[in-house]
Image (cartoon, rainbow, N blue to C red; front, side, top):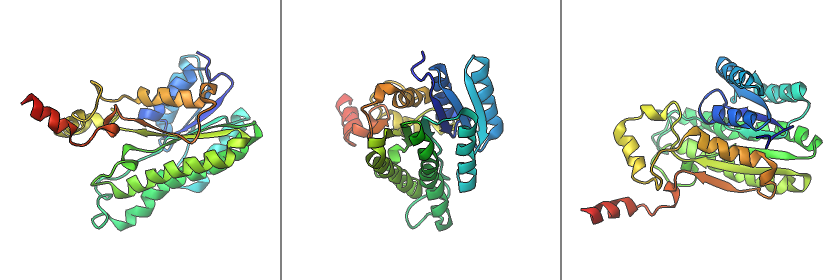
Amino acid sequence: MNRLKNKVCVITGAALGIGRAAATLMANEGASVVVADVNLEGAERVAADIQAAGGLAIALPVDALQDDSVKAMIDAAYAHYGRIDVLYNNVGFTDSGLDTTVTGMDWSYWETSLRLNLGSTVFATRCALPYMLESGGGSVINTASMAAVQGMTAPTAYASAKSGVIAFSRSVAVQYGAQGIRCNTIAPGLIMTTRAPNWPKPMLEVFRKHILVPRFGEPEDIGNLAVFLASDESGYVTGQLFQVDGGAGIVNPVTADLQALSRA
């Protein structure tokens, strides 16, 4: 408890899944939380649940595709709390029907995906940094994906954007480290958010055979790492990429098949 006491934490994409878990966990650790999401009704429910549990939280609308909306959210967070200590850029999504292979993707979706998954992270950070510097520093936490560090058949735009997030995070760490700003990236693997449990069972089984631990990831697995990166406990950690994927990212791709062959 109180690992984040007196810190103001802004979390985007916080109405559901990983963002909701992170907002709740940060509030449980004493943070004053901004629950930001394009789904304002959902964000308000999360904030209300935090308040009912004795925590501090407000809900703010943000459309990550609109720079004016992102800036208004950051400014409103600062106006309400008087400081920003942590920015968790958690927004991320792609349309798997449009974002496919290089030649197969809907080209009109390319810029949309980059703006949502990379541009919003860059711009929100750009807006928040002056407020964080005013307070003497802070922690920026960005969300990438396993798709950013491993070649995949699809999605192309999403993977490209999230790879850009990793490079951007390192740039922030280098440029502002001496002024007390830390910036790190979390790359989740398969996490059982609201969408994942509805995947076809054969698809889940494909992931299962490559995960080294005996379960799928939960939103809290990411949220707990975000709490650590937001806290002073990670004060000597910056510019790092954390793959939270149950070990799937370190496995030689033939391992699962070799194990099955050995058992046979």
